[in-house]
Image (cartoon, rainbow, N blue to C red; front, side, top):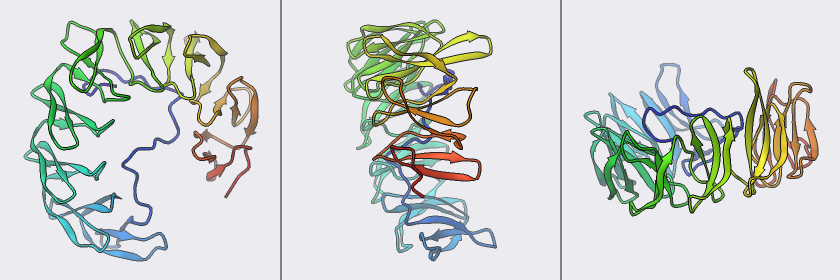
Length: 331
């Protein structure tokens, strides 16, 4: 959702895990010593960077963000301080850049430490689609990965870019519309709420209800749902309230057809042709195909994730395990 205080719709169909370009480097794991200092160890448990820091963040893109005496910087895999410890705060690297903080303002640096965007912004959001939302004096705009302010802060609210479009609210009296990366208005402000584009479709609101539009702004799925998840594999999970305490989920296609009728108490998005669903009658999670047919049932699962490269993570009462596309445990 956009980057101000507008309420976020909490979806039951949210993915168990979310992947991003800022994935932690599994070779280096932050570790705390008995005296409360931090360093890094490798996957075998061997200390590779001595615990001499007050705090550390995940290693990403070959650099780990560390703090000593209240100042933040970054080290490489050998422990060499590549970014001097000089900042009030710092985020892990993502797409070659990191957000840094000085005097309660945010800026951007590259992996050499070069300042790309001055520490003048009130807030910088994580990058998405090569751009990041910046906030300055109550207005929102965008910067690119070079730190260039490609769209000056002028919106009341701005959401992240996805598939080349971002939702914005020009002023308090208007609804949300969508712009491209030049700032050109592509879809007129008219919606009460929005979600980013996914699979060529975006969830939008009319009052309290949700529907979907395509990239031209055409209302493809009417705003009649109480909850709407992102499209993936041509389908999106949607929820309809049956009573004040019961919401059931099904799936809609890009033509607005309910290909799988609302019948589940929870539903994930489709990935690699399968989606995890559950109801209150039976234990665990079931995986269905795009016709709604049950493919397998993970009875022990208390949570079930989406598939990636033929594998999905399931949370069991005694820990997490990975399954394949037949439901067989791989570990």
